[in-house]
Image (cartoon, one colour):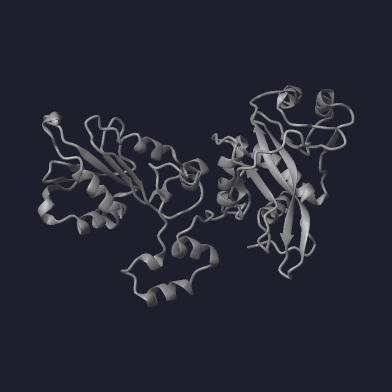
Amino acid sequence: MCALKLIANAIANPWRPDYGGDKPFSIVIGLTHKVLVDSAYREIKAVLPPEMILKEIKGASWEITMVNGHVIKFRTSKGRVEGASACGVWLDEAHLLPDEKLYLNYQMRASDALGKKFLVLVSGLPESGWLQDTFDRPEHALDPNRLILFARTADNHYNPPHVIEQFRSSVSRVNSIKYLEGKWMPREGTIYYEWDPRIHVVDVFGDPSAPCHLGVDIGEQGAVLWFQEIMRTVKRENGVTSIERGLHVVDEFLPDSQSVEGVMREVAKRPWRIEPGASTIFVDPTTRADEYGSIRRVFGTKINIVRKFRGDKAENVEYGHDAVNAALRDADGNVRLTISSRLPRMQRSLLSVISRYHRGPGGKAVRDDKVDHVLDAFRYPVAHFLPLRTDARVAA
């Protein structure tokens, strides 16, 4: 489909006298030369009739010149395309890129001042991470200039049915989502594997008149999250229905190099109720006595401050990970933890980093001081208010 769309856009942008000695062009970008040969180039040559090809050059300047004067250029992601003004851009196997920085550069290349029609295509496996953060945003749902298409393996008519059945019996549930069903799936080693922004990011903005709890983790790049309690209907596999506590994140503050008292004074300016007797402030286990004093100077001596100590289940990081996953979606499919769509999406914001939080080769969580604080502030209240049930079966 991408090959057909790129060619159709190339046909809509022929050479005109306005170009003079220049030619309109499109860029096809792959991670490596082999990826280009085996994927995008092969598909373009399969659907582009030979009579539409005027000239083809291979090598460092790999190009196909069409009879209408439009040029299709093939480049690897290691090549430089800064300053190029194309009519169309196709980034293939995009999931292999480490982050969105290269994509943002490529997107800006569809900027030919003489172009009549513009197109940016991105194709690859639907792995969560920068791809889902970039293309699965709620605000894009009604944008007429954006379209996301998922393709199941069964949709590929070149695959014989017996091949699909053999593959289905050979992969795990997670990989079947990725390779067979064409849905967003957690990247390998993701810690919050139950996270799905389509389910957990909701247009519930919170009630300023209701009390909030705070998850606080102050550092050089600190974080504060506001939580409100929302009672939710929970249905168990045995058919029993009950009303249980849930949590909803309504706001976020990411201070840089500020004192605890300075951060708390900024927090107090927000329109959320922090009320002694109703609100709890959760802090890092390493919080000092003078930092406790800073919090109480702002919110009063009766405010409830919780710090988990070694030996407490909720202090254990892995326990906290399990509690968050169970709150996101338990074994019966119940969701008890959501996030407001109003939260920011900056580089180190919760909505940007939650899907990137992952384990390294040794199985331990990869620590990153730039994002750890917001992830810790997120975990503290969940592990306290939504602890694992002793008979809970956390979804795998």
